[in-house]
Image 1 (cartoon, rainbow, N blue to C red):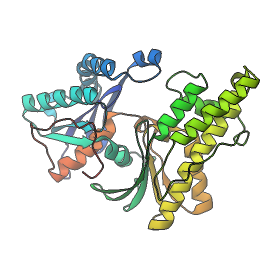
Image 2: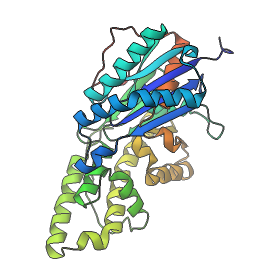
Image 3: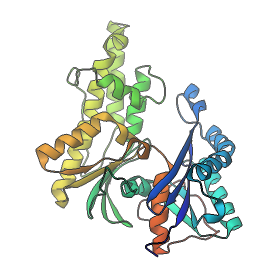
Image 4: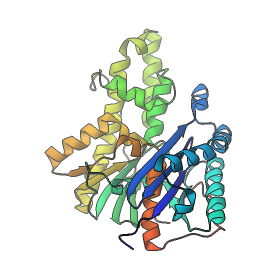
Length: 342
């Protein structure tokens, strides 16, 4: 079986990106993502509009993924899909499509946990990167999640700490919104931060026990700071946008790195991987590379296209589960809340 070619079609529809990928074992043959632009005018993802857009996008996106991979659907070995976590309406579109196609082709159906996929994206075949050895620590940082996970093998994961309120992606986006930056604001904060002084302004870091995170207090302190400063100078934000973004980003990264350091000390594991949309942030990538030199860690950073929501990461989990014979049946239902390891 190890020498055989297994073609996995993967479908991802957990939020506002419709994505389909085809993998041949661990190699990505295609990874198509349709981004929904409609949410920008609302300053955030509107669930009802997201699920409607998925319905419009899913057939052409799957068709394109098969065409780019030069694969006929009759050659597929299995279909993997995101069962959760995510927006229920969005998940339902992908789940229903995957179930129907698997039934029509009479091939296995494989459910995938979206957050586990962010971690296992490191195992996608790539000549420029090596996957982390087990056990390793993974920090998943995205719009909806912030977690530190101990990964003992492909399917044995333990959440050591997570956010008690806002996720790190929300902290970036909401801070950007307070500064008048358009949605999604996280990448814009990163862009401005590169030109700014990270120590220009001091924001408080929340004191949270253990390896858990909290970002809601930071968001409130940024709000009060901006209100106070713009009262004295209405042009304060526009005149100091680079420094504000740099200081906000510095504070968020300090919170993440402090918890990671504690996790490494507690577990003795020095192999550290990141995943999720915020893993595309240049600041966190820089801090991790720094930790390799100063703390002796070995860090693993995925390619940009495997950080944000994409079907290739769903496909790699699909392939690993296919090899293990871990299939699901037609009674499977989407789960908006779907804990790692459950």
